[in-house]
Image (cartoon, rainbow, N blue to C red; front, top):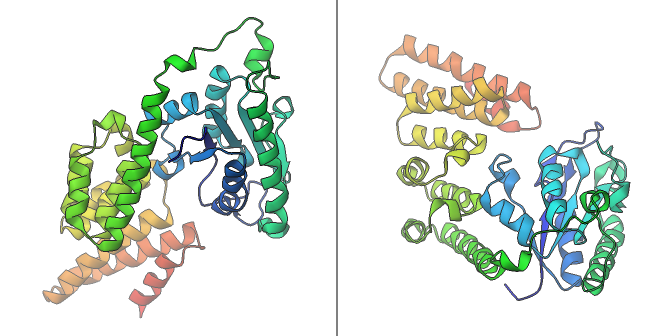
Length: 350
């Protein structure tokens, strides 16, 4: 990581449903084609929020980034509640350093005209292409360059809080350990790169070494914990997944749906099927069925069925088979775009 100003990017990850009922919107594509290169062309280092990967948890490192990054780009498309909350936090301490965006075709739940929000086009069928990326990329660069050039002036505030409260003063950001923060950001980025390398090398020992050298849990990004958790899954170290969850993860992160689903997966692969089912059933009871949770439950029932059939317990096996099919069918009916549960249901019905 270089010494360019840090620009925090708050936006959804992956493909998200279009609130207007159109095709899903690929936000990773928008980030890679327009936002990231636009930020870099302005001479800044983009730093993307990761709370959506961990179930929307707004944790300590997230607040640090909101407060301490020199600039921020916030995509308001889909009207995500967390994004608006984070924008509010940012507006409370940084009066003229935040650029807001939104897809022109989307309805935004609040009036964002006060913030000079930048509209952009998604393209036909929400397929964001270079035709849409180029003008957005150039506009982002121009807006951020303008913010940088006027940083030492008395810039027009983009925060309604500063507009409404005359005399309101932000905290002295220079005293908020910005140097330490930059080092923490660099450390987290380095750790994620090393985790990716260990996954590619299928090196469980390296993953254990990386975990050993992690700092206190409250100083580690949630995204680092999740990357490590899924890295252990990639190398099939189920015991390490379970131990990381039980011994190291912060309590808030333990409640994330993604984490609990993968914990259930790990317990099943470790042979603790009842424990796996208890975890997955709890997720479904709290959050409702999803293709992922039902697919994982179907796999547990399928493993029970295989064991009973191999042991010659035919009546028991038929019971587990029915449960497996029902779970897979429910998963497919919940989200027909996910083919995994449907394919497994059909396979078991043959």
